[in-house]
Image (cartoon, rainbow, N blue to C red; front, side, top):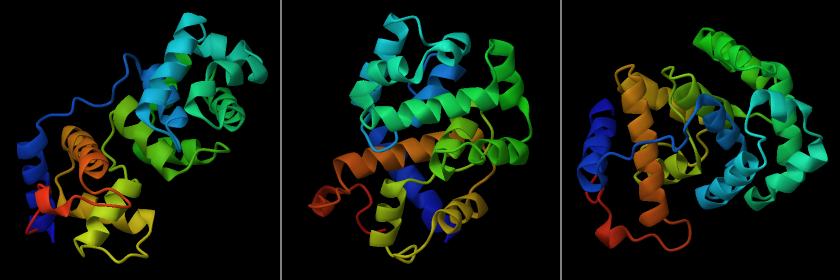
Length: 211
């Protein structure tokens, strides 16, 4: 199984090249983006983040002080904006209101950081692990719907396999490496968007043909 997982990585990397993820300029921007990208595409998240930047709201202090209604209005392009504004406020409350607070929060050991993130209302495993991998740069593999779809179609997991089982498969098959986890997750997302589509997959041209 480990050989197949590594083969998938090499095939995707050869086909798509480096993805240079996560597309955020700062740790805070990555953290906010991880919340905003829930149930939407990245283009919408970019619009929402641009709104926050334009309004001077992309700092911990500004996010902590902004009323939830104002925050919701600025992140409207990301969809579910009322729900996400509440989740952002919950997360900021857990982190603090200064740059040092964010650095201290992300500096904790992986297990503690993951526990603290999952304790925040509205933060699930995928969002928590995205923050851990991309903002804190700690080695944990992010699993999403694309990952599940790709592996199940290649019969590498059961259709009913859960988040933890899929994550464990990757983390026991791969070296513990932040850069590798980063790149692999990004490549799986690229494959899911361009070939392994939910409704009409483009199997005839898939880079993973024969796997």
